[in-house]
Image (tube, rainbow, N blue to C red; front, side, top):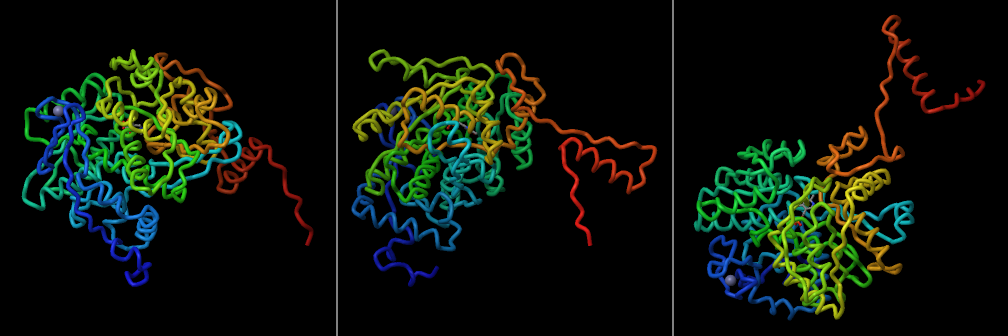
Length: 493
Ligand SMILES: *Cc1c(COP(=O)(O)O)cnc(C)c1O
Ligand SMILES: [Zn+2]
């Protein structure tokens, strides 16, 4: 659509103009640092940052109704830089000029209403917003688009050159990092650290395919994270884990899109999402808070974080009464929600900070964390996918979390839930295979229900008389018998 065709009142805003004054702010000591360089933790106290815009209040001078129109009409522009996460440029990266934006097709993922069977089974109206439909097939692309656009801006402005981007990963961070870095080669190269045998073959193939240097480390994600932190402290590398606060900004767009998908009506809505390193729940809370503070949404939706019993430090923290809360990392056990199998989430201080603010702004408790079993995760994933979805095991975890929230009365009848399926089902098909073959190692604690199991049937034809016609006839007959098909009444000519 051409500029003259946009409504008068939004014409001057349709191309982002707000420059912003973004800084890193330490969540412990409150110190602020310029964003001229990449910083991950506070040089004075070591705590993680969030990035704030000192000029954020300027955005409040534009009416919420005008913002809603800006975002809705912006979708009609054919400007690639404004099609992905930077549709919301003013809210996530006003400092990053549009010509530095890296857009690889991320964001604007579909919101699909669950079918009747699933909604009746759960007793709640719900939708699945599938972030598996991103370029590297997980929500991590939102964060990488933000981090790499910022790095691209530093490169273009001559502040840095020849970046080596590194990350530790449960599989999806490395896929996304390697993809976005490879788009910027030769200026950006990437190296990823994976826990040996703790990522799926599909996830391993992704950074290899993107040309990253791939290192496998014995142990779990938390061990890889320590190594990569040491690398980023001692050497000249760019850390792409969600410790990097630029990641959080990009992932806020998941909230903005939900708001937009529901025409900004967030009354009686609940977002259900898995928690691993806790970057995503941080971003989702932060996103809704920004839209609420600027009057774009009138209510804050309920946030329900979900953890597996095998990796539940955040659940444990909130299960204690508020006076006794103390964060204690846990040692993880094997989990089918492997991408969230993290015992010491880097973003925990951000979660504590934002959940407190979120509840205060809501005027009631509005952030919850529930715990689910491995069995429930697996069964809900398989069930969702038998009903028209393509959810990953972490999506199954979200669904299992919705079921628990419903039982505990955290969610009630008049509410609509939005389930975050964080990656594509295909990345995690190995867990489905283990279930179908009844071959889970015992540490997962999975038992099998035959009605959830599926397997291919090999049609064998007699090699003796395999003329083409015979082959077709025997095969068709065997399939007809297996499916119990009735022969057609041939109409008489
Ligand atoms: C990374 C990841 C998670 C966990 O998100 P955090 O931001 O680490 O809490 C969940 N699901 C998938 C598929 C992931 O890749
Ligand atoms: Zn500090």
